[in-house]
Length: 229
Ligand SMILES: *Cc1c(COP(=O)(O)O)cnc(C)c1O
Image (cartoon, rainbow, N blue to C red):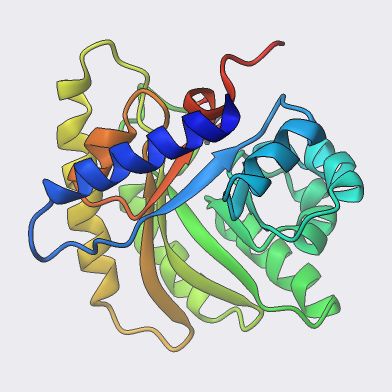
């Protein structure tokens, strides 16, 4: 089933990408979100063509990382506490959930110890009332400037988790706003960043996210089925 699901999500991404404006990138990275799924399921997805996986908890990812005998890119998509940074930096190709100066500086310090350049995205909080994580728009500039001075980080874009609303058309304007913000950030002058990714869209909203300009989508349920908690 995982293989069929993966192919069907990939097909939906292609269809949604056809509806994009000409100026938007047509290349879209699919992250197979494997939180609460087994290493065997991860292998199945990777063997069916998934090349990037997403996990939201460092502890769970660390256990799987030791067991997964496959080459794949790892993205951290969940909130990161500073006391978990050391492990996160050892394992993740991308940390998508950077949302504070303190966290950025801690990641930079741990990456420097490993002689690693850590790829990161900044997670944005567009609607304060509806989400707890992500940096507020009014604090984004300060974080961008700080990150640009941290030489063991490479900022590659923005990440957004849309609130879980029944009416998806209420989410669309948020995705539009994120795309505008992404374009704005892309044109700022950095020494140390290469802004090219906009990560947004999950199982219930990835098609809309792609239509509105996401070039990373993070999909779990549509590939692996519902999670057992
Ligand atoms: C769990 C999770 C996803 C995937 O969610 P689905 O609804 O299962 O596709 C995407 N992004 C983040 C940040 C998540 O925690």
